[in-house]
Image: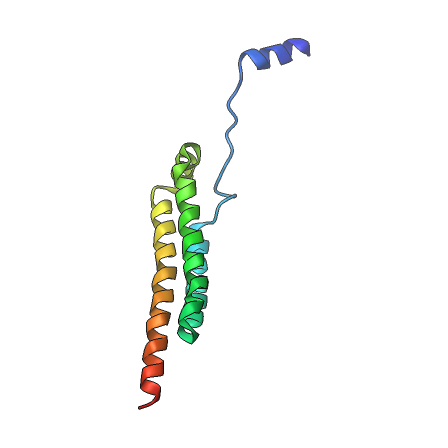
Length: 117
């Protein structure tokens, strides 16, 4: 037994784990973008300052993707399992949230300006 432990210390083995089960899948990111975008659109259309919620959600999604991509070990593992498209979809879904939130601001202004006519 001691010999086995000594050999394990002398010749360490790499442990490989999957990361795909610990990160959001691509379909989940699309659904998340739709839900967060609708929340941002609705809140921004009511009051322009409520768009802060949508932009905070955008920022959280974008920084989450950036954080994962900037970690060398995580980037290699994700690209190996999910493909290079994973990070592009992460940024695209974050941008969708920002665009829907900004659209809510413009829709709210348009709705209030046409209400009097």
